[in-house]
Length: 113
Image (cartoon, rainbow, N blue to C red; front, side):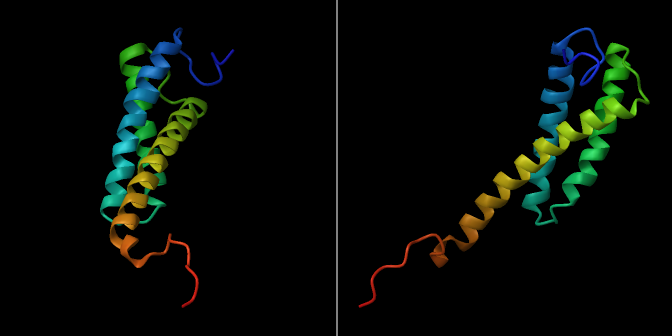
């Protein structure tokens, strides 16, 4: 059912390995690195586009997929973006909690004395 829409190889396993595991893992690490260096959120989109091209090349070089397919590049870049944003969001949340947790912004106000 997803064959031809999300991936072009004969096996869903190839898509899951190359796009999700390798590309998604690299995007997760890129998102974490972007957050750790306090760069803006839109940087994840830029890196995701580059990673989408790399993942597309892996499909082409290793499994005979098409190199210049806009549809499959968009899928690869979208998966990279989702993983990159998840890595960014988790890392940024930890940074904020560590840096600003002592302000008590998450505590409920108590009764006035």
